[in-house]
Image (cartoon, each protein chain N blue to C red):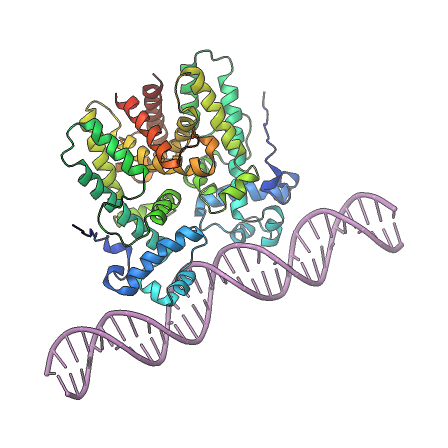
Length: 223
Length: 223
DNA sequence: TCTAAAAAGATAGTAATACTATTATAGAAA
DNA sequence: TTTCTATAATAGTATTACTATCTTTTTAGA
């Protein structure tokens, strides 16, 4: 059985729905590749237009600016991650196993098994690690937040907090622990790759190291 | 007794030492205020030049670009923070109290008591919270790292990891816990202010909330 | 089927940004 | 006094981040 999961991203993230046309889909797909390649600061709509053989103005018809494209990509990712968490937790009874699955999902690339996917998994994963905090670390975070731009992130955070609450009902900080796990899954992987002295990584790969650190931490915190 | 502590920031962070002239000091001081006011993305050397009544070219003679100015400010901050940690830990015998002091320092503005200070404490604190991860989340992090741009951060991290190690010698991830505490001190405060549903803040202020969450977490992890 | 509207995309701009190169000036050394 | 050097001011350029307008294509109704 092959299947495809798609998500309706909040329509305030775009001017025109990129899923509604071939060129719209190319903007997102090649946008992911180019942001990965150049980094968000050096990425421009002009460069993306050259890449997909269209013009800047065409891209502006889909996204107000590059920050909105980043938000679109991350909203898609957060929605997908919440779906994956829900999907993988099906029929898993004990909360300990559920928490292990969550940590694994947060620290690894999107799995092959979860339906066909039009985006490059590796590039998407690296964008999430390196660029996702730039989605909210902006001066107009409050205005963007009012447009529900962080709803999928909050939903994912709430879902994980729910499992934390089920595992340790008396624990006072389930949401903060949840957002800390998500953020640390990114920062620890980034540090393990680029600034390893900020971590305890040995030769292992960043994903496995981060998973071990966070799993150990979580069960020490929650008992 | 009034005293002033200054730090020699790594000379690769600047073209010409801003401490060497009046205008250099104005660049850093007003740079902090303007980055706070506009956010790092909207901050430009042109705007700073207008503010301090000089020209862009003059500022470029001190800093290669605005990212280097940010690195300079953060290097200064990290060095100061390491000094403060060292200073405040003097004569504190038990490691539990030491860790509490560290969490308090990481989650609050620079204290008044620690010598006179030419920079706006509030603005500096907000920059550290909102902009510090942009210092390393860049495509050329490896090149910048070779220039020792993150040495003060690593030193601070190592110092805290040392106290963690003294408190819990068998704990396997002292450095990762240390960098996670530093990073979470920022992200949880940011979330508490702008995206509170990602945290468990009640009415309390962001600093106090974050301190409580991190202190609780740390002692659950380390016993 | 034809026409009209509306949607999409290409072209051509502009103001601001991120620099660089050149020129001018002021002080120190010979 | 002259010359050297350090510093800043002036004036540029290429790129970025858009906007406005025009042309073409698609779609919908008569």
